[in-house]
Length: 262
Length: 341
Image (cartoon, rainbow over all chains, first blue to last red):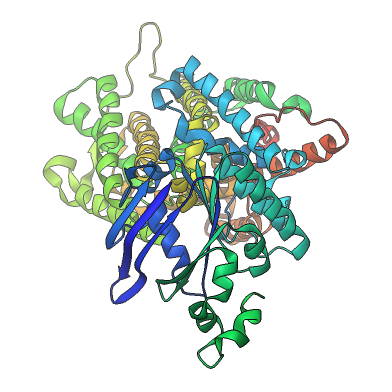
C-alpha cells in the first residue's frame, strides 16, 4: 500500500532520514521504533507531506506522492495524528470533530453566503461522520463536553476520531499511547486493532515496547535516520543491530536480547 | 436567561439599537453611537482573521484607512458618486488584502504579526507622504455624506445612524453565516493548529488568504462608512493606534466569538466616554479595569459566558439521553447591549 524507496531528508548538515527503503502492507499494523532523535517523526512528516524529502520516492496505492502538499496527501487517504492534539478547548468534542470530514466536501464562500442546499447537506454529512467516528472510538458519551474538560486518554481517542473522519485508508499515528497509563494503553491498543479489523491500515510510532510487540505485524527500526532492522516483532527482538542501538555496543547480543524486549 | 439566547436575543439587540435614538438626548450621542458601530464592523472583520483563524493581523486599521481614503479620493478629487466609491473601497481593500495576505501569511505566529505591523506602518507612510494622491498631512476635506437611495436620505445624524446600523446587522449576519459553516470550521481548524488542519486536508494558504481578504473587506467598508460619516480624513486613521483599539475591543468582548467584537466595541467606547469627566486621569481608571478584565476573563465577556453555558448544557445532558448538540448560539451580552447600544 505504501512503498518508500531510498527516502532521505537532510536539514542543512543533518541527515534526519537516511536512505530508508521499506513498505507497509494493507490491513497490517506497522510500527516504527527507534531511540529519541532517530528520525521517526521526520519520517512521518515526509510521508504526510509536511516536509518535502531531499531524495527518494513515496508511492501510495500506486500513486507517487513524493513532495505532495499535506492537504493533498490527506485527500488521497493518508490521515495522521500528532503527539499532542490541539483542540478548540471552548467548543464541544463533537464540534471539534466536524471539520474532520471537510476535505471530502466542496462548499465554498458562495455556498456559505446563499446557504446553498449543497452546504446544508454537506454539513449534515460532516456531523454524521463526526458522530460515527466518535462512536467508533468509544467516546459518544463525551460528545457534548467541552474539549478542555476531557482526559488525556480521551484526547488521544479524539485524535483518532479526527483522523477517522477524513475517511482514510492509512493512518499514521505518532505516539498514540504517549502520556497515558498502562491500563489505558491496553484500551488504545485494542482500538488500533479495531481500526485494522475495519479495513484500515495503521502505521505508528511508539516507545511502549510491550504494546508494540503485541500489536505490530511488522516493525521498522530507525537509528540516526537509517533503517537498521525490519521484520516481525520476534525477528526484531533478536536483531543484534537493534540491541546495539538500544543498549550500546558493550552488550553481547545474546545478553541484551531479553532487555531489548522490555 | 434562556429567553435571551438565539434568535430572540438577536432580535432584542436589534430592537434596542433601533429605539436607542429615541432615548438619546442629542445628536452628539447618536453620532458617537454611529462611530461605535463603524468600529464594530471593523472589529468584526479583525475577529475573523485573528479570532477565528488565529492570525494576529496588526494591519487592520491601515486597511480601514485604505477603504476610507478610497472613498475620500474618489469622491473629492474625481467626483465619483459616493456609492460607487463605496463599492470601490471594498474592492480596493480586497485586492490589496489579497496581495498583502499572499506575502504575509507565509509567516506564522509572531512573525506574521510583526510583518503586518510593518505593512501597517508602510501604508501609514504612503498615506502621509504621497501628497499628490492623499493630500498628505492636510488630509481630505469635504467628503460628501452618503446620498439617498430612493426615498431614503442620509443627511442627518439620525439617518446616518440607521444606515450604519443596517450595515452592522448585515455584517454580523454574513459573519454568522461564515463562522457557523464548514468554511468557518476550516478557519478554526487553522487557528487550533495549522499542522493538524493541514493533515486534515485544509489548504492552509488558500484558507488563510480567504479569511484575510474577507476580514479586510470588513475593514474597507468600515473605513468607507467612516469617510461618509466623519467627512474628513487624516493619515492618523492609518496609525497603529486604531488597530490596537480594535484589538482591545475584541479582547474585551471575546476573541473568536460572534458577538464579542460588538460587545467589546460598545462597552469600551461607553467606558471611555463615561470617563471623559476625569479628563487626563481617565486612563488611570480605564487601564486597571482593562487589565482586570484580561486577567479574570481571558476569554472575554462573551467567551466566558459561552464556555460556562456549554459546561452547564453538558452537565444537564449528562443525566438525560444524549441529543443533538445545539449549534453555539450567541446572544449572551444583551444586558451590556441594552444600556449603551
